[in-house]
Length: 524
Image (cartoon, one colour):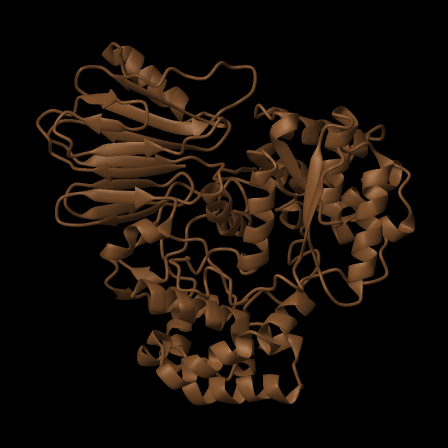
């Protein structure tokens, strides 16, 4: 939601607003908010300290006046404290003459903020491409995490010289960049329900509160309605409250679940009154790794961005062309009702014991995995896996003028999930029962087929992926040069794609290999 260049130790840190960005009188620093109806900005100064805030708007409050205003020192202290209590996403920038600059992120992250620095200034952006000039090499530990699908929320990125500002963390820059993690967020476990507890009513009320927090305009808002439990639960509830006003969109999957997805979406849209427009993109036709994909064409696409980049971009462009400026997703519904290891012992994503299933993992990557849990951020207010998933979607949406809203990532929704007994969370009983309460059939509440993008990924890898891998093996890759991917092991895996012996558990991770290769070729 912000781009910035901050130069510390300036003698005069007086800021002005020109209608698009904040700048200092000497032009050595600037802060550019993301221009959108769902975002606002403000600035205050006590004559010595200056605070700039870029944040999501909340409902029932008029937009802030962006021009800097003078306040007393005591008022500044009060406003500084209140700024950190904002219930939605925010970024806080603080400058003081002859002192380092500080940047702090809020707990409810909607967009990423990447940071880099040179000898004089701190640079930041929600788009990693803006910081390309500051890259000094590859971060083996983070690349290794991505290669085996072992994501960790931290200040690391795949590129040395670029850092992530994690939730509630503060960046200090005075010639050297220091990133300070916050104290761990406190969480609680399941509670015993009261005899008269109405869980579904509480769930509906909490959903309403999460959506009502922001000033959503039904005429300018589209709901991602995949046909799954999470997006289906949110979208049908919103359509109950705004009958006939909400448009929808989705990516169509492949495989045996495709016909079921189409049926379930149709039933959901018929159960409550949606608007007529429903933008559908066939991910089996506009597939990832398609020659028209920006990532394939050499654009500066971050390795963190949406793996289904091409179809997701196509869908986002269709939404924007229809006049929408906000999208509501069902992301983070899995994490809201996730079972703990104590409740359901299960193998974690990217288990180090499974590295042998990925023959292309290079020696340097394997060595780095020993330290894969080093330097990670402390427990967050919102699940760290949720925050990472939100980062994947944001850049694609922001480039098209679309602001993302993720109600399942609302802290109150997170807390409700933590408090619910296991029998309400297991197999998403909460969402299933809510959809059943709307009268939807078992085809919706208990689908027989798995609905996932597994077949889309397989199709992408076995068609468009094969020539990309052939070129990578012929021309070389920074991943080879740094010992992170073994060419011989990759060649063996690619041969299996050609032989028609694709296996989802092991071969699907090849999508990450090619995405990382394309990113490193573009960025380095």
